[in-house]
Image 1 (cartoon, rainbow, N blue to C red):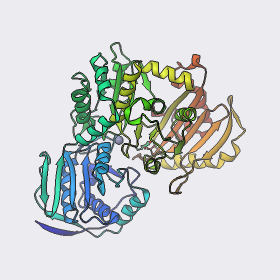
Image 2 (cartoon, rainbow, N blue to C red; image 1 turned 45 degrees about the horizontal axis):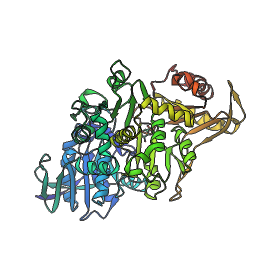
Image 3 (cartoon, protein in one colour; image 1 turned 180 degrees about the horizontal axis):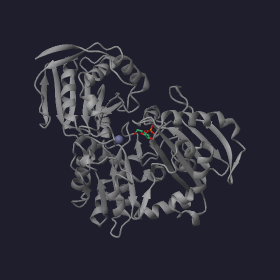
Image 4 (cartoon, rainbow, N blue to C red; image 1 turned 90 degrees about the vertical axis):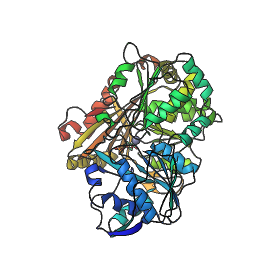
Length: 543
Ligand code: G1P
Ligand code: ZN
């Protein structure tokens, strides 16, 4: 086995986003492309000699090959030990859990989250730090800078490691340990939740459908829900991780998780429906005939978390991304705990969690999590819901109704306009920004603007500032419109418009969401000129 230093040229392409580098598989397979990025991670992070790294991915096409390359490069860069999930699999939250458990230097996670997989689809790679969370901007910037000047990388000439066998192997001087991807994660879940109570819930006939969408949560859900908690066989569907996710997008939304939505709104709906995404960090929750909006789910979890053993002493505080609805704020105010509003993206929760300022956090985009790891966690959210249901012995619809009666209902929806011409989208945002100071006091079809700004965030822990995080307009009634451009889209620009209206009167709580928001939707168009500028009469995705 010899170490080779391969000459290379700097990395083409733009700055990786907050979720690492996401590109087409085709691009990743080009000569030196993956290698350049991996070497840049090692160089930028520094002090890798003898360190322990965690490595795994969501099993999509190219996962195995990428793992072999990374292992050989890790050995050639004198890394001490790499802990890999069996068959190269680790869900994003399980990788975070392992990094923390092993006190590893960090981890490399291979995933393009909810994007489709296959030879012509997407692949991704990101680096997580020793707290188990996505690397902070200082590190991702340093990785990017390195990719722009890199001229060689190190790789070991060696045979592939068998990824399907548990145990320890050596690769030159480096140890490779292949571990059960579920074990540590299951241990953590057992500590947080009352498995006995949840078992009893299933024994008494509670019916759940968990759709793993042929992605990474399959093995986790099968093991924990069916084998450990006694949910009937068949509870977890599409549990076999496939390299192309069976040809679907592993994105748990009404379009891609259609079968689950149809089931839950159909005649023979079970008590609960849930699904997760490609890498296992997102979740959606449905009850019989009801979809729980992620912003509402966060609020319900915040109000009821104390029913689960891991949170029985209450929460230190909560956090939500700015575009997420204010439903959780109302719970925090009632309990008297702090509530933080952060920019979009999980990494902004890291400092708050590390400093013990918050125990629970979430985003409107189907992400919920807690201080148990430093990623959002799909299966964790399902287990917390199950624990709450086992304690409360009410249906999901009853819990939602009761929640809205207590706190009022924040009707909420996100409208996405995809593949918009970038210049058009930029102009729309610039024009909005120049309008902001004139908006307060202006009336629009029965709503008067109270405040208007471009969200800026100062991290309460390290004082860093994130500017231009989205234009928000709040009305006297408490209604709110937020406009921002996606940071994860791959084609043109994606304009996201977040719509919210707060309703106290319970007799209005059963209205269909889009109907409840009609006026706000039309005001959003009036102020932003969306239809006229984009030429679209309707958004591409409504969630
Ligand atoms: C989207 C979501 C955001 C999430 C991110 C990564 O980002 O809106 O909440 O953190 O994916 O999963 P966006 O495309 O809006 O920038
Ligand atoms: Zn994901």
